[in-house]
Image (cartoon, rainbow, N blue to C red; front, side, top):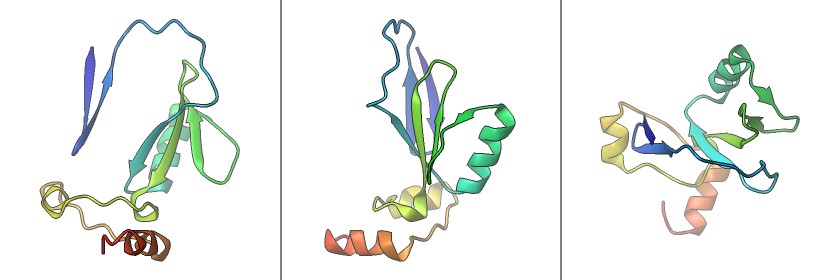
Length: 104
C-alpha cells in the first residue's frame, strides 16, 4: 500500500489489480494550473486523450481526468487554502454553480 499526499487530499494505491481497464470509470484530479499539468504530462510521455479537456491514460490504462480548480463548483475550506498558501479564484460559471447550491 502506498499513500500519496496531495495537500488536503491523498491517493491510496494498492497492488493486486487483475481486471482489464475499462472506459467507464476514471479518476478525477483537480489542479491549480491546467497548463502546467499538461506540460508535465507531455514531458513524462503520458498518453493524452483527444478532446477539449485534459484526460490521459496511465501506463496500466487507468483513465484520469484533470480539471482546473477555478472551473469546478467545489471549494476548499478557507483554513485549508491558507495552510496550503493558496489564493485561488473561481470562474464565473463555477461561481454560478455555487450560488445555485447556496454556497456563496
